[in-house]
Each structure stands twice: as C-alpha cells, then as structure tokens.
Length: 150
Image 1 (cartoon, rainbow, N blue to C red):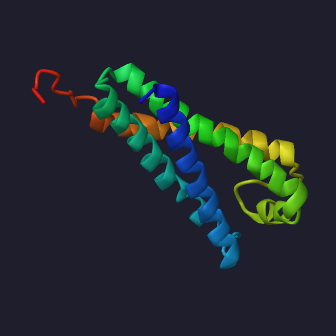
Image 2: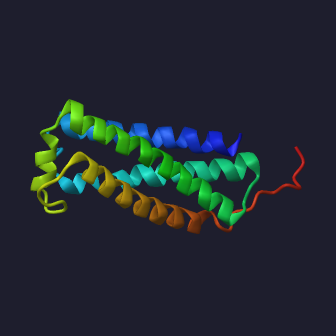
C-alpha cells in the first residue's frame, strides 16, 4: 500500500473517531467538561500506531525517520480536517460553543473562531509530535523479516 494511502486512510479514521467522540460528548451534555477533551490523545495514538504498523508490515519499511514522518503526517492531516470542521461548527452550527470555550480556564475571554483554530492547530501539532515520538519508541526496533519464504 502506498504511503500516501496509509496516511490518508488513518487520518480519516482519526478524524472520524475524534468527531464522533465530540458528537457523543455533545449529545450527553458533556461538551463543557474540558478534561474529557483530552481523551482525543487516544485517537491520535491509535491512528498513528496503525499507520506506522501498516507501513512496517505491509511495505516492509522499518526505517525510523520514514515511519516517524508517516505517523506525524497522519496526525497532521487529521488535524487539518479537525480545524476546518471546528471553524465550520463555530460559524454555522453552534456559535454559542464559543462561550463554553471562553468559560473554561484554558482559553480565557475574547475568543474568535480564527484564534481558536490557530490555538487548536498549534496544540494539535505539539500533541501529534509527542504521540508520534511515543509510538515510535515501541516501533523503532521492529524489523521485518525479508528473508522468510512464503
């Protein structure tokens, strides 16, 4: 499977997972619980791990930096989708969610959708890097046996 397909497939899985998680939080009335929003790390770990694992076992590629970049670009692609979705949500679906974000201790007051998008993007890049480096600690010594006969 091509690297681009691995990245896009797993980024879409991560995007849908996080989107459904936030939708579930909204449906049960927990969208104002900031701590629950931190669980999106689980989706990042899951997708990054799946992308790296697929590249190692399907493509036979166990080169550290290539897998590191695959993991990071998987998370970055999903992050771009999520930021676009959040801006769309804040402008067109639920502008009152801005007040919920302002009332949390993490953000402060006087928020705008572009400011939130920028902050989420920066936070997402940092968490993507951290998650990818953590996952790569597991996969860095995994080698594919290319001498095995089929």
